[in-house]
Image (cartoon, rainbow, N blue to C red):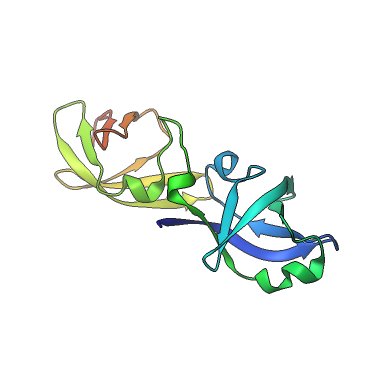
Length: 160
């Protein structure tokens, strides 16, 4: 079972077993759905309710209706099974992008070596072409992502 870390349980909320998950996972709409399963310490927990409160994802699990029932989950990492995560055709996990082949409109090719955040909302691709190149992920330079062929096509601009 291939697991993807989606966040961390940071606290409880109220007395009815609701927990706060701190998550920066980009596809929360695919994970935090009622009747989906989250995994903590290799055990599956079924989501019974979900809401957003401030910057937290608030969840209750089936069979855990009291604060005392969920205290053992505090400070634990939360995962989802990769097989259960159904992404759209244009959605790719960061860890899957590593080693994708990069094709440029001028005929060069390379590979993605790293993905990092320059700021909270600015994801950067570190690409090896003839030399190392940094490309903003969410920019007009990224023309196409092909999950089937594991390729990304980028628009070369002057100076690249």
